[in-house]
Structures are given as structure tokens and as C-alpha cells.
Image: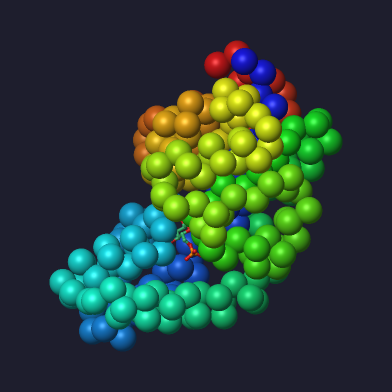
Length: 218
Ligand code: BG6
Ligand code: MG
């Protein structure tokens, strides 16, 4: 079926915010008396803030009450927001602006499908907000990826069928969400990791509207 809409994850697909998440989580873990590695940070890709905190507390073998957890997540987020408030358009990943421009000009509808509750500030700081016809982020969804809710809501807001949507994702949980939504997907990263994606590319600079036409048949 013909692809008419593109649904983009944010962190790791359009911008590289993983380093800021890493710094903020590491600061939190260190303040609690244990360390947090980049390998562990990798495992948090696509995972919501509270679920990330649960995993980190688990790695640090700490138990906290729900109230304490909210306070810890709030602290991490304040550190994270202080960093993303300094972001510039130079931090947009390779090929992103050209690709978004060409698909917009070709008439594709564009939505965001992100777990982040900070998407508005990131899109604004990096000058990407104007590309989007709909924004679905952590403020709008109740179930995190791999649940398909975020992408199904994006399709609904755009007035598209799931089969008309193509998802762009860097996280295994995000590709699983696309598959569960009945959507085709472009994995951004390595084919050894994103084995369930329809196709995988290194970054958006590898893609053009012609590639999307080829994917109509997949
Ligand atoms: C995802 C990131 O996009 O958003 C995760 O890959 C992050 O690492 C999640 O935890 C939630 O982000 P935020 O900005 O709401 O804490
Ligand atoms: Mg991501």
C-alpha cells in the first residue's frame, strides 16, 4: 500500500539527546552512591522516564517509595532540561533537515511519535517544529513503547490508516511498537540490532523520496 505519512521518533532519529540523558542519569546515580555506564544508557533508549528510573534503581540495588521516585525523576529532568535548553540547530542529526524538507514538499504528512515529555523544547531549540502536522509525545500517551499507542495516535491525528504510515526509529522497543501497530518501519542504526525493521539505514542522509516510493511495495 502507498505510504502517505511518516512518523518520527525524536531522540536518536532527529537529534542526539542520548548524551544529555546519560549525563543527567549518571549525575543522579552518582548522587545515590553508584555509577551508571554508557552501556546501561543504551538500554534505556525509547524507554519512558519513570521506567528508566526503575531500571537504574534496580542496577544500583536501591528501593525507593513512589514519592521518592517522583522526586528523583524530577531532579534528573531539571538537569536534563538545563542541558537541552542550550541545544542549537547544529545538533540536528545528519541529513534530517534535507529529508524532512523533501518529504514535506512531496506531500507526505509528518508526525512526531516520541516517549519524551520534553519534545516541544527540543523541536523549538533545533528549529524542527515547523515540519510537523501532528505531535504525539510522552505528554499524550499512557503506554510506552513497545506498546503501539504512540504511533496509532499519530496515525489517528493525521487521519491515516496504519498501513499508510512509515515509522522512523532507532530503538528496538520503537520498531516493535511499529510492528504491533501494523506499520512499516525504517530502523536508524545497525541492522544487527534492529532486526525487526522493514529496512535499516545509518542515518536520514541515506534516504530520499525515491526510497519511500520503493517502500510502497514492501
Ligand atoms: C525517549 C528516550 O525518546 O524519551 C528515552 O529515548 C527517554 O531515553 C524518554 O527516557 C523520555 O524522555 P523525557 O524527556 O520525557 O525524560
Ligand atoms: Mg529514539
